[in-house]
Image 1 (cartoon, rainbow over the protein chains, first blue to last red):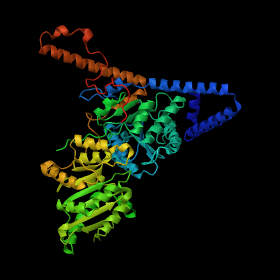
Image 2: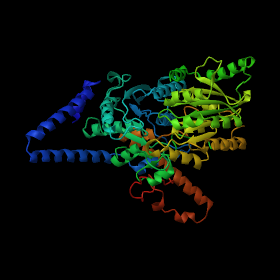
Image 3: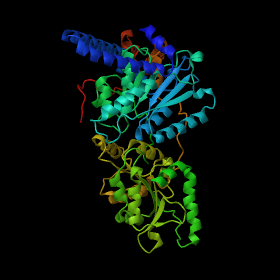
Image 4: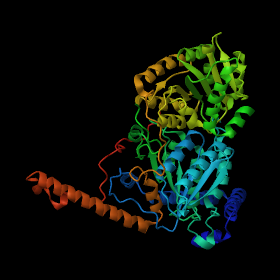
Length: 300
Length: 307
């Protein structure tokens, strides 16, 4: 499996995604042909093997997740003198942020501001939905702010991908699967394409895949994470990449959003974070992280 | 729509505001003697979905009258997709164009008196949310009327302007009602519904007069990068999970530091109270990797609650 992945790695650029699509197409054709040509016993046997493989991979990836206790330890309130995680000496730190629209974008920008530190080995990739100029403007403003604060190479490198929206506001759930499929097709490229600012001849394959995907509630984020999970299941992406952090929107104080329920139900997020204590108490398996997006002054 | 979009792209919000004031003052020599320095009301429906019923509510003569009665003379509307609806309704109120050469501004007169005029600025979207909200903050304090969207509420509360929240019930599982409840719980502002906005304007007036808004210190935007004590390190830990050896090493270092702190704590406790030394059995020391003292999610609850 490693050899196959390295083979894809060497192709570079879009060819990785093309190979994935081609593989899916071949799989589809073979299954349709097999459905007509093979006897039922064979179909059942092959389907069982496939389902067993999928379940096994899903659970082996879930076992590698850091777990709730570990997560709680990581969000401990900071006291002066506490050791903080040091990522400056790592060969690469590559974040992928999935932006939604409107409030989701505001929250994500705030989250990025609250987590940012200057280090030369970082790359940031933003996924915006096509036509969402508001989010792009906000990213530009954020990045110029980062550039003001870190004029040197510590600001890292950035790029962005635009993919179609998974579900428009007010779009009925009936037609959502089709738009989600279009999103998924584009997400493969966004997850596997090497950043142009970090070419292979200088950085090797360290920047090939994002380390952490951060998303906070748009349906697009779930699709991107699901695609990432499938890529990991098929051994197309190394197991220690594409860690997923889902942060439930700050607006949800008592109930989960649909995206949140999907993340919790599928369990694909390595950390499922909520920002309100009450919601954390209601949701087993969630990590209370405090209001990371909104550190607000008290009224008055 | 064209005007609104054009305006949103033009940017430079501070200049815009100065332009309104400046032109207003030069205009005093002309037919109108209004210098538009009363309270400002900023209405926003957010960046994503429209909120036609809110737009309809704020363009009724009754609401505008109420605003004027409370000393407002400027109404700024971020209409979203409903720009044309807003424009039609404003024009149907007999609005006249301003002399400012800005097509998206109208003056509505609700009486013969100049004091009964209100300057209405409309646009579909804007890059200048912060500036528009800031204009409502003080000197004199006005109010922001907003849908219960998280983005707007976060920005308004950070600037600490008076806030009226109107949840939009047509969105997915009415999730804005939840944020409205949070606004009530945290005492961040007034929650209104379509139909009782006039009462909300009365209520927010008490809020302003109570001194929460009229004598605030000047607004300082949050610093960037954030100080180390406030920085969120969760994502750095997640990056380290991609490098398991490095993660193990750093967690071990953290454990050692915690252990040292705990032991120091116990020694301090011993010095304070006699007899405490008897309880210092090695087996009872805080073990490595103890969860922090705050326990949050109750894992005893079974199943996920879906309301």
